[in-house]
Image (cartoon, rainbow, N blue to C red; front, top):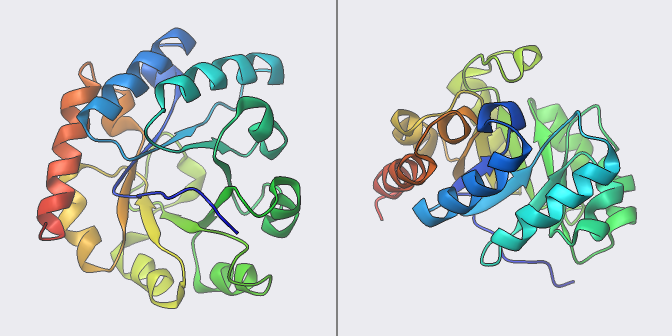
Length: 215
């Protein structure tokens, strides 16, 4: 088993509308990587598969130094040439996703409770590579996610054998709290996609995380 190395420190999840449209996604990702983003997830629930693949390949081309994860559409990971997929609790089950992707690509899983961790672990410790836990704060991006708060996030971290990043309205000001409960990174959408200067926002997040981790 030889999966790509990955770093959850500053994990960008794209949002087409917040970036300003499909054309702006590629530039947002490029500038965010320049600012210190360590991992990118390409997410778009509305594009048809062929357009998703075409745009995903362009995003992949600017992610030459860091891994690219595809949200939900496990069947398109190979076509895009991405490094793995991220699935939610209502997406393709992780065991099935692992069968589709094989042993050499990354799988991230959204989790909200210790029970979600236990369910994933029942398929073995190698079925996923990291967890995305949230929402830390209620957001407009995923209003259905609800707000977990730090205590519930710590409950998930405490039982997880995998590294954990936190998502949901996360900003640089959350870095200290998130590090304190044992998380391995900040996963952001609006904090980068909604801003006119993705590079400086990514840099602010990266610096805040380094400071929070004492690096």
